[in-house]
Amino acid sequence: MIGVVSYLVFFTTVAAILGIAVMGLNLQWGNTGLFNGGVVASFGAGAYATLMLGGPPQDGHVGGFGLVYPLALAGGMLAAGILAWIVGKLTLRLRHDYLAIATFGVAVAFENVMRNATTITGGAQGIRGFERPLRAMLGDGFTYNVVFLVGVLVTLVLVYVFLERLTVSPFGRMLRAIREDETAARSLGKAPDRIRLISFVTGSVIIGLAGGLYGTFYAFVSPQDVLPILTFQIWAMLIVGGAGNTKGALAGAFIIWGAWTFSGWALSRFAPIEAQLYTGSIQFVLIGLVIVGMLLWRPQGLFPERLVVSQPGQNREKTQAEGFT
Amino acid sequence: MAEAILSLAEISRSFGDFKAVDNVALEIETGSITGLIGPNGAGKSTLFNVVAGELTPTSGSIELFGKDVTRLHPDQRFALGLGRTFQIPRPFKRMSVLENVMLAPTGQTGETLWGAVFARGRIQTQEQRIRKKALEVLDFLTLRHLADQPAGKISGGQMKLLELARVLMGDPKLILLDEPAAGVNPVLTETLIEKIEELNRGGKTFLIIEHDMDFVMRHCDPVVAMAEGKIVFKGTSSEAQTNPVLLDAYLGAPVDA
Image (cartoon, rainbow over all chains, first blue to last red; front, top):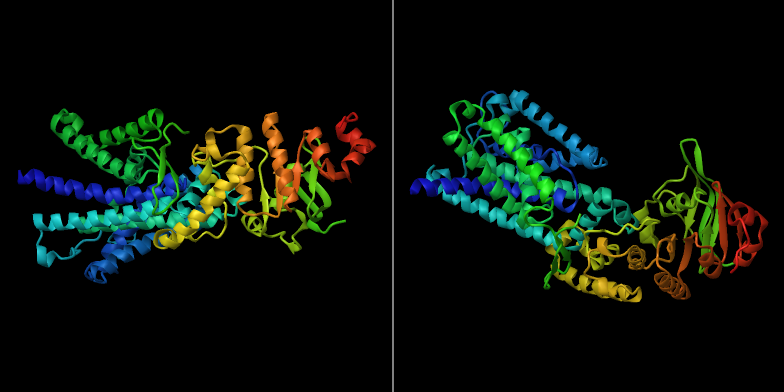
């Protein structure tokens, strides 16, 4: 029994961390229409920077500043934000698929830099030896994991409230207008370039926060954690959940992460031995099928975006916006 | 002649070798409803986009409200008091009609990231004011009953009215309308004309591209005609109907007004 509970705690922690990342992507894609194909670069920047700033000094590579944890995590967010600002300045003039290709390229470059800049990032070995916060007090066992889960959930709620407030505010209205029609928004006094950049950076900072928590949870990050598959997983979560709907983004994270882990378990248990060698590849295929299937049959996701009339503090008028294209 | 609200000096705009607008000089008088006519491809819409700031002129300068705006972006020109609509309406489709309209006022507190999340009290007061004004504008343009509808689901004519509603939220002094009557049913066109004239009496200046000659001759004065990127005529509507150049270049035959 304790095994099951322990596993649920583990599962929920990872799902919640990914949920935070999906909410960040939802701000970019769901609300603003920015096709970020390099989610994993922000995630990785957050993870690497958090561990480098908060970890102990090590022989052989730079970093290990031993900062107190909140500062390290904030540093991870800052790193993701700075990277996004630079990438955004360079690429946000591009639209749709071009932006996706450019950001995807950045993410691949990021992975390669992490893999090869050994003196800074530990290369293929990654960054080890990170001391998780409060470990001295809570140890390494079940208690620690439960406390960590609570911390992640609190963070998730804070991010959720932040984004929900943003969505119903005039700022959210502006993001949606730019998503719908940039030229028209510009003709009505809005400055799309600036607003797209703010949205991109803010979303990336949130994704970086998720990356920082992820690195903390495993006390380890390596180039294997910043492979393109993570970008696709996070996208699948958003598409399944429903782009433009923060609740949907969260639901998608839990559903897809559940399906992912379940399929891994089921394959290892029931698939013929020969097929088990290809478990990872089969999972890739499955996630691809899920994305394509959703886009074909339910492009608005399980929880479609709702029409929002901005009225902070008042009863929000919401009507189902299902079936829009 | 009344003071010019907009003056264009030697404006040209080329696309590659093609001169869409060729050395245009034009002054729009404050308080007028100026009609801009011309055959397809005459450069009217290009000129509109240059005035609105969506396109930069290849050469020449634009003065708006006595200020050189040649280098300003469209959003900056809107903030100064220039509103425009589009030939093919561009509503924010997956937003409600009300939200479309509430978007437009510039300088809202809640338009900054910080303000949106932390200055909620101030936003609420501001939103109530904007909402009230938006509903008034929708009322004025007979769209109020559609306030909660997604803007992508209303008719093409209603979209044209919606575009005007959005523009009005910015309290513009000069409004550019690109073919407001095209594809709009006659009843809505009448409504639109009525509203344009009412707004005009309230002090707003209009520059209107329109193919419906009846519309132009009855409601626009002066009338400006373009052909092949150049201005070929400017005068009153009665002059326009008897001008041989115009009859030749565009109208083809005398018009019954």
